[in-house]
Image 1 (cartoon, rainbow, N blue to C red):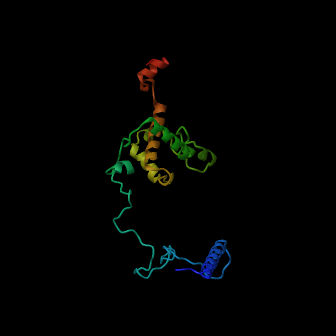
Image 2: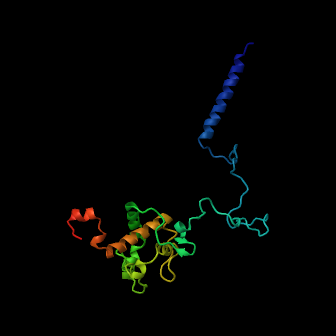
Image 3: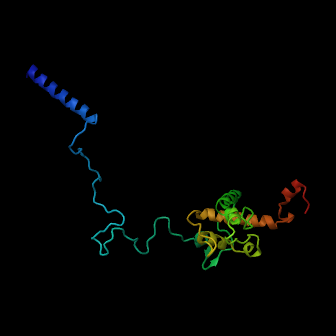
Length: 212
């Protein structure tokens, strides 16, 4: 079977025209025709935006409330001592996480960011906000007997829920582990004020030449 020169010429002309069209199309030539959308994916799906009506439901709301009794993944807080500072209805007396130097140091960092502005870096209730706002109610000193003897869970609860009329909740800014770290640092701060030579480990006291 012979292919004529004319046929080959026509094929070449068509191919060149098609290639030229592709090149021209890629150069962003203006057109009044709508763009070709060969793969729609989900670009034109039916959907409802927030606060829109949806007649499918009896109340007409597109935004649906969670099903009663359901929780988001990771939101089940079975360990009440850890998440709420309580065992039953009573505040826990001990911190329910393992305490280490790094935890206390983390607590110091978080305390200085969120607490010291009102409570002061030494915990005496004389932070910079209190000093510059004479009308603000001064928080109590952490070194008062009442706060020294306060259960760890109650201190945690103050961070979680705030103190009525005086301190807002910081639950939005301070996560669970950091709350307990702050409690641990606060206890260390209180101990530093009331500590004696007898609280220093024997090897450290001997190295410093301190006598009991």
